[in-house]
Length: 364
Image (tube, rainbow, N blue to C red; front, side, top):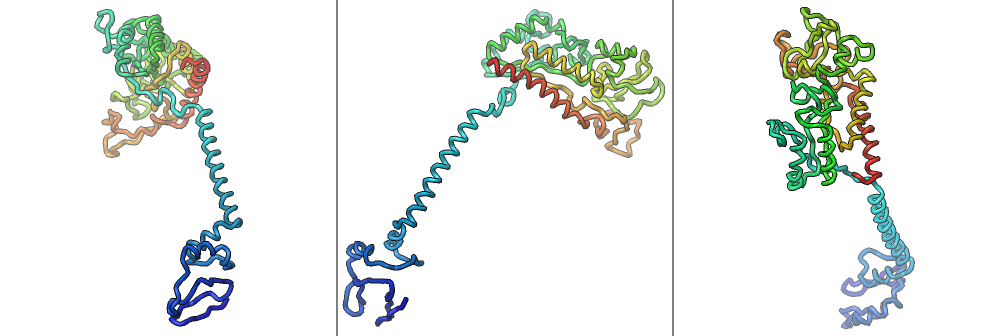
């Protein structure tokens, strides 16, 4: 390519370019009319390659050539097809996937303490029939899930959290028939019933504990027992949630049993597979009744360290005999022990069996 220099330092391409409409303005000529120039450009412009700074007209000329136009159109339609395919895939996944949130994750939950909610028979204690009479209250609030605090048979040392029989209703709250009628009416109104469940311990009046105290071969290890006597120091420094030692000596068995709450609430031994199966059977019992869910109480206390070592004191300088409250110890050996989450996952799997069954029948 060569350049020809004219007067006034104007330059024009001298090779591969034909531009007869150009005339040096200094020579008295005038440039070709722009409209006429654009019309003739396609025929007269023979520049081999695009170059930086080319005018718009030249750029449009190149962009209309097949070697540039065809790849551009292919890329455009490829993007359109991929976008439509992605949208279709997203819609399909959403349509075929299970719900992201189940009812117990998406709905507000209203807790009812039956003893004080509503008394239907005038004896001064709230009951299950009282809850049934007030279901319109939950409808007015648009509540779909109701969690009812314990109403199992109990000596009421801890207001129902000391369970004497996990399969019976305490008479102060009503009967099993009252419960079934309450559950049926809640379901008819589109509500879910969640029961409080206390797997960590039972009442000291529970049949299992009485059999364990007597050394029954099957039940002897249903609770956490260890050697001690009535006068010697306790097995370790563990303290109850309600204060003082977590250990109480039992005269009949001649050993101490663990209770992380009141002494009337002995802790179950969940390292015993029979105990774990008993709890699963109880879960099945209430799910079979039609209960929609169980709220697990005191879960972090379910397992304890087997070595029974003293827990570290918050204040190492405090005399050990003065440690009497839970706030004075780090609970490294009595809460959230290894294996706890495996057990919770096992219970979750049992619940899921009923969830799938109810979903298949369309009752949930």
